[in-house]
Image 1: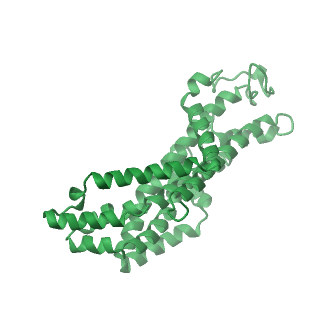
Image 2: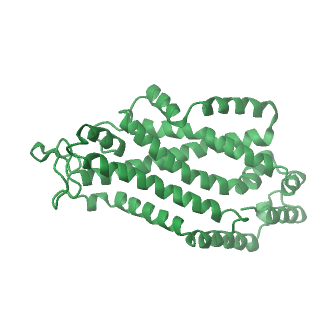
Image 3: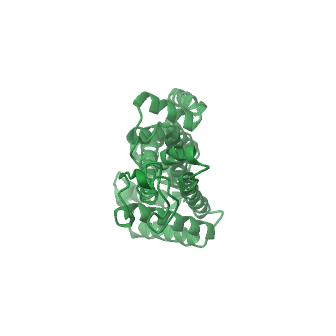
Length: 312
């Protein structure tokens, strides 16, 4: 979503009114224009059937996670060895695991953990990667060279491998998995934002902001970064799916949530020993990971089309 037209006019208005901040000269016209743009994006997104399916999938998982205490039929941590490895039944919708715990209840609470990991890891990546990329692209020079060489080193490691290294250093646990997946996503945002800033900083409204005497910080955060929101939003949607997948991989390897915490990757790992006699222990967590990642990817594709003026 490009906003250079009304940004340029706001800077000119600021100069005429004697203010140093273009945002002070923006009136209801700018707000209404932004509102109409968001409304158009929303309409285009809802016309995309695949994106609507993704929203339904994500909404179902979010609702199940939020209302897990109401939907769960058993205590997810309570063991009952007499009921171990039972198949799906009226009492246990998804069966029981190797310790007799209700799999359905554990899946509900495991969804909470996966969603929290995905959201928090993206927040970490955005809060660190976006400023790094913006400053690197805006100032350029030696700062840009040093920053990008460091980013290149991080990118040289596959994301899941970098997450494994971070978890190995920090130790296992859900919180460290969040940090690890967040750190692994930093270079993605830094490289994405840097490329956008390099293109945007050459626009006429940025030159007008310099002419109006605005400082570098205000130009970066009020003139440039707002025009980088579209790729950041799209990438964040995909990154949530990637972080959930990484977290499940770490849990499968025993580097994520530790017993008895219900986490999809750990549940999948514990169930592989009984895949021939109790396949439901791997089928249900595997399908949950599949549909969760699919939902975010479908929404990401829809947002990419909806936020692209050429596609609209």
